[in-house]
Length: 503
Image (cartoon, rainbow, N blue to C red; front, side, top):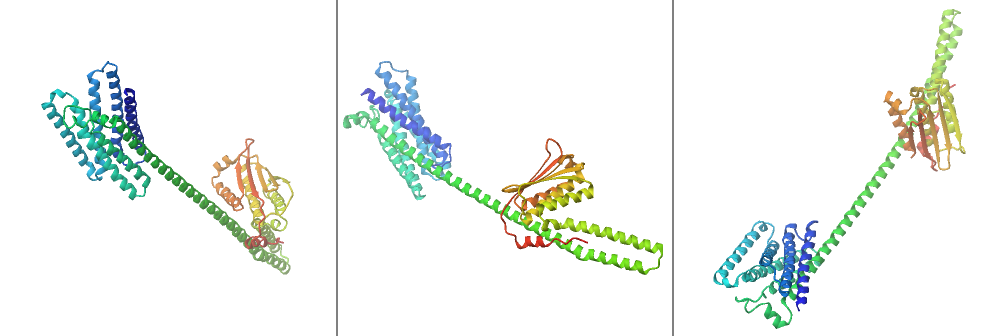
């Protein structure tokens, strides 16, 4: 029987101590079971009362072995027992009163109950000094444990009703069972150790044992397990709610990120389409200007040249007059050649009529004539006609890159390579000049040309890479996917926009 009571006390203490640890851990997380300030006193009760039961095991073993512990150990047990009931009462009061009242009223009631308990202990000790410290334990159970447990049960019952109204039926059910456990626990505190004091002389633990054949501590351990198990299960339900809430939040975040990604993709597609239409419109405008230069200005200059030739035949054979007319005709020829170059730069006929490769060859020849730049050409892969917009973009990039070499690279030679690969076409222009970093440092406005190149390449879903290799110079590389695209009306406009050669 002695070891049976030790096991009962151990389970009794372990149940409440476990409850204290579980509630302490719950307090550190988001308060979904109850407010943190409400859970704190119940956690303190569980920890203190569990340790009290284990101290009582220690005292019983000393008594059985005939080696009793010093009196101060018993005093520690009494103190811990009384202190453990204080947070239990405070927990019940906090649960029963609303937030506005809970700031002061529960504390006032608690102080009043402790004062009444201290007064009764003093009165009993005054009239029955022979009982020594026994009334401290007994009266603590009568005046603190019983009302504290009942208040805790009522508070949990009230909280269960609130949770049920909020649609959290499972937690409400666990709270009702825990409330029942605290109610039964309060009743078991009426069965105190037998002392010569009413009603402890009649209703006590010895009478309970004689009547039912098992100690009252067994019932206390059972209801302690009932309370602890249901509160822990309530915490598990709350954990499941937190997990569902977290999963829902993560799902919402993923959906939001997916929406943002879709929006970015739509914006990127819209930006590329806008760039595409911008390039098309720009080339269309170039073609229109080229046609006007050819059809109007060039024809006007041709007519002027013919009129001067007629005038030359009509005027007297005055050397000065004839020299003046010859000078005017020479200037007209230079203007015509300049217009021809301008028309070609605006919209090269070779690009529309013959394709990208001949246009690049012609561009290399023109740059050699114009600026003395030697361009080494290299074409690989099976040559084919590309989408008109793709050919235009690659030609403009090559044109801008060669202009940059002439203006900034400080060298007289460049390399141009065009590779037709199965899924993409790659254009590379390189030189052995000063390098891209130095060029940008000396001419910051060159960045606008690079930006234009990049926007053109983006309009055909290509990639532009500009770098300075370790060997020196600058490398401009363009990779454009070969897509089977239909020529739109706007692209047809580009094809039709090239002017005929200026004669």
